[in-house]
Image 1: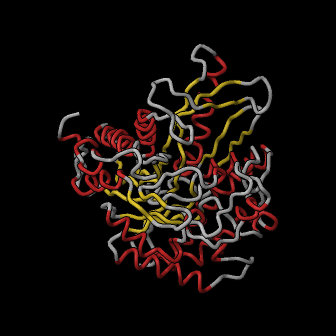
Image 2: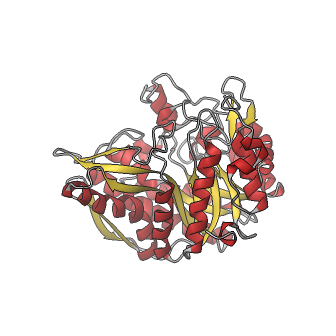
Length: 442
């Protein structure tokens, strides 16, 4: 790249990302129930107080500003807002409005996720996603949330990683609601696309124009055995189904998944065509797919063929896959936001290089004509990492989970340098990063 190509324009947004359940604390929802049933990898792990962001939000906004962020992604917790079906908690709604207003006053643009994996405890029993009743339930929830966004110029995400929720919760039964049924998975997928359309309708009625999209986890897929025709066939099937089915439905109005023997659907969704203002991409890694001769026929692994070292959670570092996927979403003709990208780095010393490698791919995508408008790092803080519990550390800020003290990792200096200077400098040129010792963020 030329020196000019290593420069971010003044209009480009650098921000940070969080989600309610992982940071706020004090939430009773389907995930809290899942934990009590001992279904995490560490059966005794509990989110509980999380990292107490609900009370320490002002401090955390200041931490985001300190690294040069001008956008802050959060989610609204449905279970906090509607703890019982039909009963909306006014104090919770006022609390979110207060936090959003203070965020805006701090110079942080809100990026608001309406649904980030979790549900009220009543949802799966009364209005699960595979039934049409889910749509009215979601409509009522979004209707109450819409006034919270008034006057904020918020970027709004209807669903975070819907395919992760469906794969884990409906096809594999590894997360709430714990179903393993292909037909119900496809029914739920169709209803979540319809729910996005409903969110567009409700937000539009209250706010007028709204910048609405989804945040889609995308994986770079490759055959585990390059020479095996069935492994290669899996990649040809999985990539469009997992990475693009939801995006495609919100672009063309046509929802299509074709995974023989696993789950398939082919339906047109009324109102879904051209129903986003931006495309949200979450990217972390590459998956190596291997055919198995028994259901579900797919096995996937994380390998390290390039010798970069797996991340602490065991994922391959593959920045080239990031560029590939950013180029793929160019087809939708919409602005692109990186709504999550980050690394589990428990010593805190690898993250600056990871950031450099992945931001370089963002610039390469822009140079190739992809309209990438913003990058939100996952996450501002170490937090509760779903099925993994308290082990992974994705935060720019290290959190002592006993005292909840926030401490900067070397990546804070690097992120600030790039976000404020607008030039992708090498990590070694940033004083706080170059001098960091491996023990700095332990």
